[in-house]
Every structure is written in C-alpha cells, then in structure tokens.
Length: 132
Image (cartoon, rainbow, N blue to C red; front, side):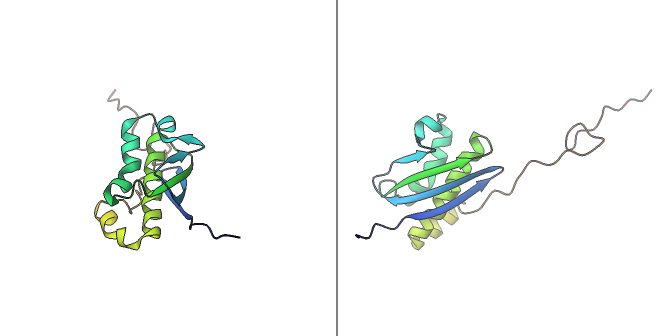
C-alpha cells in the first residue's frame, strides 16, 4: 500500500459556528459542505476573509481545503473557517506562525451573545422609564 501525502485536520470556532478543516496538498481548491466556495459563501467579503491566511502566507496554490462547517451565521462561519485554515497551515509549516500571528489570524474571537436578563427587554435594554 502506497503512503499518501499527509492530511492535516484542524478546527476553528466563532460564536456558535464550528468549522472542521482538512488540508491536503493540491492545487488550491476549497470545498465547503460539498459545495464550491463561491456557491456556499456568495458574499465577496466572506470569501476574502477565508482566503486571507493563504494570501498572507502565499500558499494558496499549494493546498486543497475540504471544509465542514455548521452552526452560527454566515459571518461567524467564515471567521471559523479562516481560523481553522490558519491553524492547519501552522501545523503544516511551523515557519508560517509569525506571519499569521502578526495578522491576528491565530487568535480565536471570544465574543459571544450576552444572555437575556430577567426584568430587561434584552441583555441590557431596560423597560421605558415613566415619571407619572
């Protein structure tokens, strides 16, 4: 049995979105949930965000990415995919870490939706004040 090129697994999270990334040496194609990148993320800003780790490290044509993403909204999913790809690139080539760290692509965004409190309309919005 011939040995295959190493497959790199990685995960990225943002809000409620979780992305599982499989990085394979290839030609630079990205598949998201069995669909093309342009089909799954029609918004240009989301695609730019996802491709950012490849552009910074200039490795866009070296790897194929197979992505499985679930939960959250479109923007959170794009951020989760970006984090997962950046982590996978560091696993593949440790020398890429300083460039990705400087661009802030290896830091998980910790912000989440604040829970609603009782006696409030939303997390912080108070009921209208009535003087009389």
